[in-house]
Length: 441
Image (cartoon, one colour):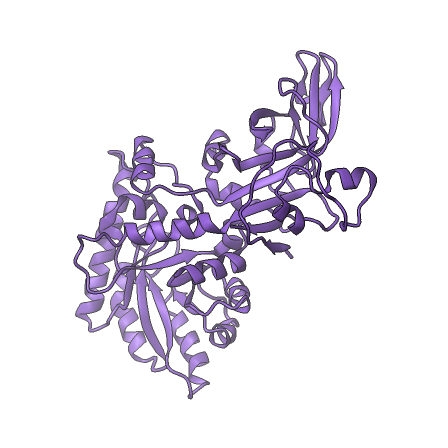
């Protein structure tokens, strides 16, 4: 289970790990006491006072709520005439993109999120048990046998196969005291992953009419390439998906079926395709402070200007060892790094078992004392090595930022991801359960 701690005061990063700190009452002595609180604000130090590996993720609640409000305002422009504002469904699947799904959902509900999106009933149950009351949409639907939990925890399933209607209806019919179970229909508009095909709309309407214990609450689709704007098949895919979706939607209406809430837009579409906003939008990675990659790249820069965001998570650890090595010495498994000069190598108390992506070995950098230090050698499960030869004064206990903010400095998670050929959410979701999340204002 992921340990979560909440800090209510503003965090101030202290870069000098040798600063004098008060350690009384921590139960530590000697070497442990020297580094127990060094290099972090008093509030974070208090949250991290329990003995354990010095690896933690600071999650800024103010940045998270800022991003939610920025998205809400962006998709509800003042000059647009709508009877009701567009809703925002916050995606908190994948443990809230690594930020802690239940805790993030609680923060976002308080900030006004209208819906939440999870990938499974199990994730939805965790969010409900955290006290969240707003609607929760189970995006990848349910496996036979989970219907009871959907009802028990008031989770809204997505139906992506027609035969799921009968399964849901049987479960809902067993409780004749409740209102019809609301669900959302997913239409496959061209991604060829999940959803009913356009030519199945008539059959869906026929089967839905037989299900007296169900109610269609929304219709959705998902884009495969909403960040692509090139003159190519991929660049044209989103426009084609839009056309297919709206044709299917009109067919539903022609058959007398009220679609309810219509929603299409994921993160890239929210920022760059206003024609897809529908009645509700589904922010994922942008909720956590980063725009996805665009093709061409200029589109990302444009999106960042139109919809400025704040990074939410900073992944941190400490230096646990310093080694001076001669030129020609190898570092780590397989001697993947060999020192070209006499060097100082710092060992960090975090590896790929914590969320330091293994692909960062010999390619990535971290922030220490406000400066960039290259990762050297292969990233191990529990430790990572960095070259601090050119950074003066580095000591055991220094705080190191793997990505995120460090005072006035930023090592952007999306830039780190691009450097190793992956996506931002891959890095975020890699932060494992053994890493303590500290929620700060």
